[in-house]
Length: 136
Image (tube, rainbow, N blue to C red; front, side):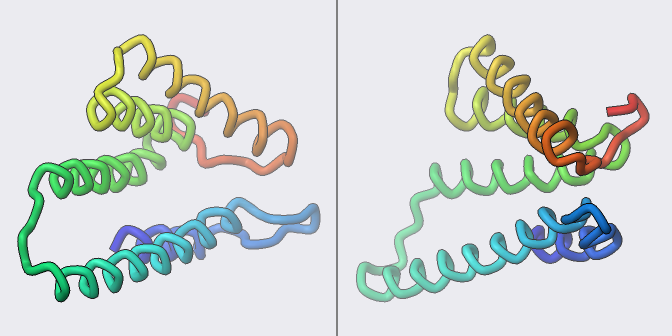
């Protein structure tokens, strides 16, 4: 569902501009990859389950669903807060709560990841990331 949502939203942005890939290029292919890889995971899990029984390991499932929910929330926050802030919050959540790393590490990774996206897309490629009320 999230892959479809990302693809639908990406189709509202320019796919290609005269200068090259537009702001909808990366999210569209990200959504396509998300759909394809999730389909592979579902099929492989169904094939494995038929050979080993129907036992569900709830702890990893809860972590996976928490990550999915955090990703969906961050995508919803892209419009009001902007991509960089939404992505930094997502990264912080995953590092701090899913991987249970120290707060200092989570903040450092979140800021570095957002800065990396800014450097690559905004500065190096000249592709505008969605901005929020704060201007970034």
